[in-house]
Figure 1: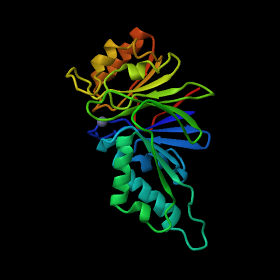
Figure 2: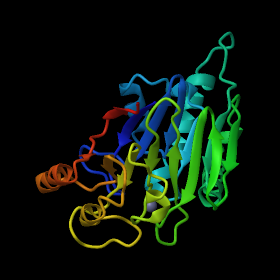
Figure 3: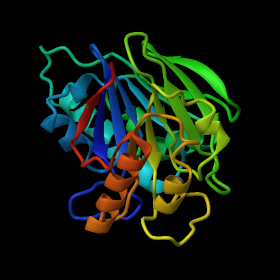
Length: 263
Ligand SMILES: [Zn+2]
């Protein structure tokens, strides 16, 4: 299984970072987690066949995580249906969209608002409401656990993706450090955790770098990737490097376009 960082920024993008979005690849199966405005270019740069993308999971309904879905679906439709001649085969493979009850309603409404499901010859779009309670689901060939995290008043879902051939992936989504994430994370797992504030100011419903430093043992995983970050300063990189040294863990703030093999 391989993890690609298609974006690593918090809600405000910076020159080199797009909003946080991840892609998990297991052989030919792809799972996109959230959808930033640069997903398509990032997938193309990685040589990933976005035209056959069949599974998208949304963590929550905040705009920086989901609103670019309209452009993504439109692009796939243009490439695989609209631009094909009468003799060419058009895509019929469904696009499956998953998320908790709150985000799935909004994504469906958004796509209907711009008439995408009614576009001529478009492939089926299936919406999968996974509820608001912790649940296990099969997304394509991926075995996933979905669980509510602590993101203020917003229904936000963290996700764990099991990997029979290697390390599991846990993604916190937007949240304060919480038991829902830490209790599902084992030492050998790869944890991707948000960090929306690198300075000390507390952000309700989010995590700061000071909180990661103070809770590094509680976060369990020996391999930690910090995403959903503002512009990263040299000081922040130095603090993360020092934390890696003192904790003995692998801790990184990845750049957009980085990837990790989970084995
Ligand atoms: Zn959010």
